[in-house]
Image (cartoon, rainbow, N blue to C red; front, side, top):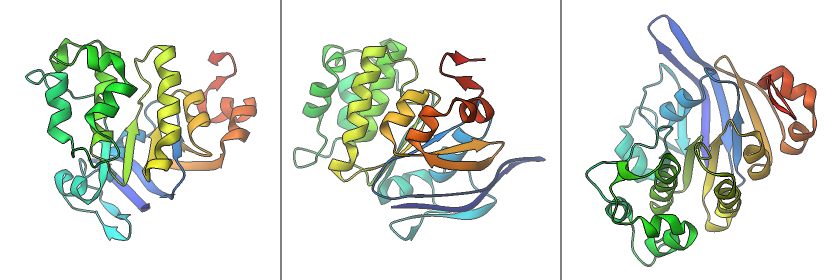
Length: 235
């Protein structure tokens, strides 16, 4: 569905992305890495929020490179950005109505409220009146309501309570049944390995290695080498 080839991003003298290539098919793909490795920059470059200096991004064979974000969204790509980006002037329900595609779509407002009951309870509250976890649920729901071909999620479990994280994992694992591709960027190793069968590890602006999720979940030495974590958490 999504093909990223030899993507470079520079900010002045800083070479942030250094030839990143990934290919996303029907199964979810997760990207993990320490902070500052370029994961969020990659999400923004794919979505057109940052213009790459080199490389190509295509969706179903259609070139996206150089298009503004709104045109990329119309091609079928959605993003859950890090930082949520909810609107203070809109209620929860107004956020959802803004992107809802009606009853014929797989994801509807009714399905969102069934999946995230807390949003139904807070439907009249403004976007910035929500807790951090509630805002994250709203950002995720907003992207799903666009019913995209591919959704990019940048740290979707951030700020969520453990019970909601378990619920999120179930939602993300079911996305292929909705015909939706998923590019998942996560710090939570459990979320990444339980959702995606394949994991790409990013180190200083490059994809250092790709490996099966089961291998990464079980190999503490790989976790320490690339991520600085082990079964007990961060070092």
